[in-house]
Image (cartoon, rainbow, N blue to C red; front, side):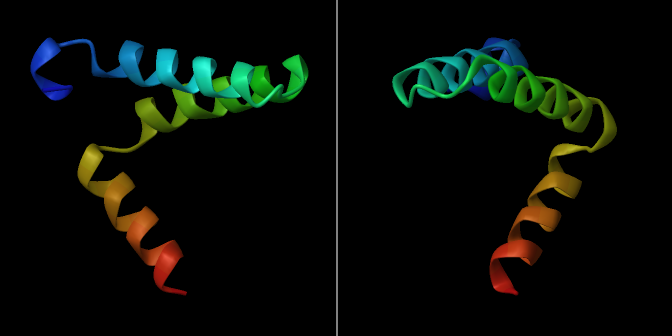
Length: 59
């Protein structure tokens, strides 16, 4: 359902912000994470991101 909206990136960022606020993350840390996430969205395809994620949890 998330992919069908055409707004995947915005929705993921919204969930991330909600979660970081609930966890009381410092604002500077939150901004750095959001910036890095935006860069990852631009740099990797979904398939590449999944491969990197799966590889990191298997190590």
